[in-house]
Length: 71
Image (cartoon, rainbow, N blue to C red):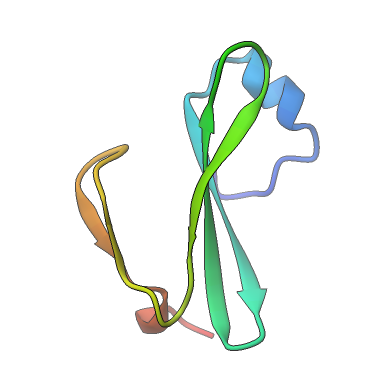
């Protein structure tokens, strides 16, 4: 989702399997990765900061590098 949900429970009830949230951090963009667990709750899978490029497998394989994103 490109927008921080105001009601994550409503998104979970729609069975959206995962969402990412990007926020402006002190040193650049920070990505928060969430996955739908059992019931109507999301679990934080991890964060990716501007100095922490990361390889992820879901929803498809890619490398995330927030340092390359606009600030």
